[in-house]
Amino acid sequence: MIRRLLIVLALLAAPLAALPAAAAAAATKTAVFAGGCFWCMENDMRGIPGVVKVESGYTGGHVKNPTYRDVTSERSGHYEAVRVTYDPARIEYAYLLSRYWKLVDPTDDGGQFCDRGPSYRPAVFVDAQQRPAAERSRTLAAQRLKTGAMKAQILPLQTFWPAEPYHRDYARNNAVEYHLYRTGCGRDRRLAQVWGK
Image (tube, rainbow, N blue to C red; front, side, top):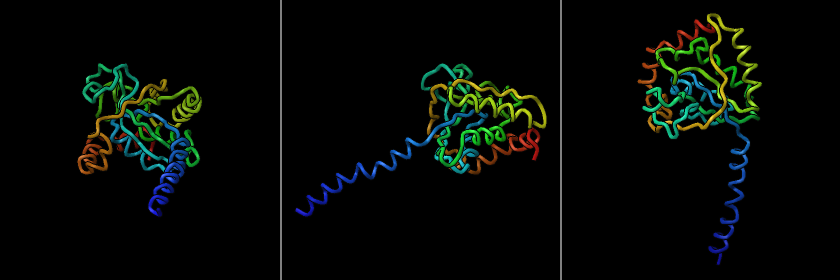
């Protein structure tokens, strides 16, 4: 009898326990950014307080369920991108935008750093509500550039396709290879030239 009562109580409590998690998920928002190699973008955006999750993937193109090969072949129209899930009670979209600009070379529309081609171009993908903040942020970032002219685009938000599992959390799962790639690609050296130290 007591065992049945405990089971009934557990079943009744389960939906209540799920409420805080569901409420937290409903309270989050997302932002989508392209900035060259998504391994680097994922790693750099992850450390921002208020960011809940960062996912590598593809967006902006016409191919459904694209693969890395589809995207790097330049036939899909997709960009390598990250989807940033954040808590708007802790961080504002405008702050994510200001942080994003410092992680990319927005003067280079031929790719980013050693990664060349359309799939590596910098862009911010927005819905109608995000567009005014993104446009304002882009204008401010253009005024702060130390070299070159702003070429990064603000584009309409499209379906975000998560990357293959081996691309996810790459910097965490492959720390040595990631460090060699990032250093060899010259990403941080170029960012210092574009934005200053």
